[in-house]
Image (cartoon, rainbow, N blue to C red; front, side):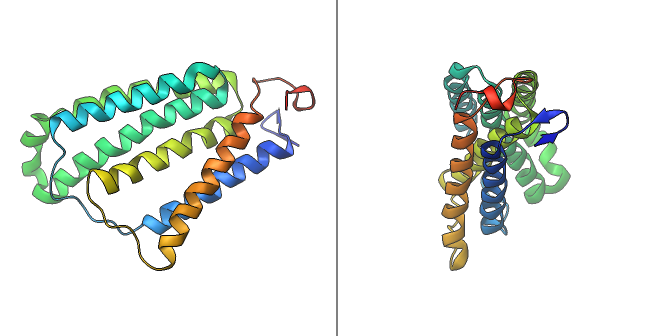
Length: 196
């Protein structure tokens, strides 16, 4: 199948569909969380950047578009966490949060992590097709903030049907990402000769 001048194999389309469905299900199950009342300690904020950078570097060993997409996803997970940190500050204090936020590392780390993640994403687009790169990005971008929500912000695990949908959605997204990583190829490489 051709889309945006790129050939897609059935396995690639299945991987993209699994990631999209899984991320949507996980997001829907976690919907309704409220703003955090406590800001993250400065040391924790720097630790988030270190963890994201290490995960990105480990992922980049494969040097494919999918790997760069996943690496950028770790960066965008950090972006989401710092965006929450800033948003929570405004939700709690309104515009009175500005001096507190400017005195914290969050807005500056947000800028650094955003630039790094965007650079990795652009490198991914140069190596792979957009759908595969973005699907690979969405897995760590979705899972990172969920882990931070439960581990750092002490958000409550969902109840009822949502308690089942959340892990099922995450498993679905991870399976799709693994499928994309297995069948990843460089931009312009014909689908029929790509390594399985």
